[in-house]
Image (tube, rainbow, N blue to C red; front, side, top):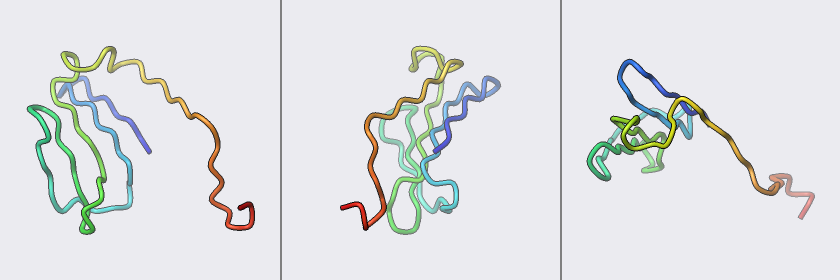
Length: 75
């Protein structure tokens, strides 16, 4: 996952899956766009006019709660 803020366009983009190709976009609300892959899974979310919609788009904090093991042997 990657979060990108572009101050020139004032756009905040949250990329959930970098390898997926966007085949469809949908404006969820004014200025909030979801991009989907061929399977209908969300690839990224864009927030336009981020300075107005996000507390501080220049300062991004990543927080992870708990740990989920994807190893089948640890179940």
